[in-house]
Length: 320
Image (spheres, rainbow, N blue to C red):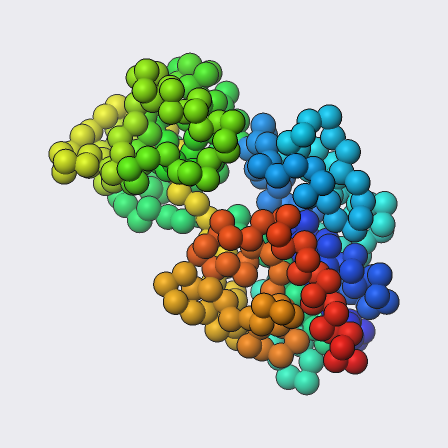
């Protein structure tokens, strides 16, 4: 069986960048991806726009040309998939890594076969596991943890849980397609991380009463035709409801990290790694991208984790 220099788990922007850096330095690599290329981006809301400008999303010194200063989902799909296609990157798609075992080298078991590698890079992101509410009724079909577009919610009574970018976008877009929107927000205000050109819009819609918002509130139960929540005074409300958009965030696959031997520290379950090399407590096992932040998924982005690829490959070469 062939022994790879590097096996990369995840074909997101950072995983692709790791592959490009490995290729540039003559390392034999392979990417394993459970979905399509930049799979998380593919599942983003259809009309999503990045906070970052195009040049801050670039990889491999390849210009990101777009008609808008803030690239959208389709722009990013075209850019990253285009790089993978033109560069002929070695990627196995629709294949899930199940287990990483370490002896002299790594044995990686996937849903299709097994691989051997001297080094492994985990660049799996965080978009696959919703941060669940753990309340009665959360498993009803009308409850969605992923939002793509507003049209299914036209003329419906919609509860949006959360106050970050995804929640605010869902609330505004569904409201503008005729939904009656109620936001249930656990904090006292709209998140400060909401895109600066969107934040005044949601605050004005709330102020004028077009979108109802309950701050310092907590969702208690979801029923077939209603939703029950507690407001900041402790009063319980039951309102008519057709759909619940639970935009409560997402988490890395902590179970996979633990099973791979990586130590997780603190309440945020932050993986242990050397910030200068990105190597974890398991020798030759590296992390790249947003997965490094544990529960703090707002710490690492494409623009500030592109450098991980160079750091990792440099460390691998230094060990040769």
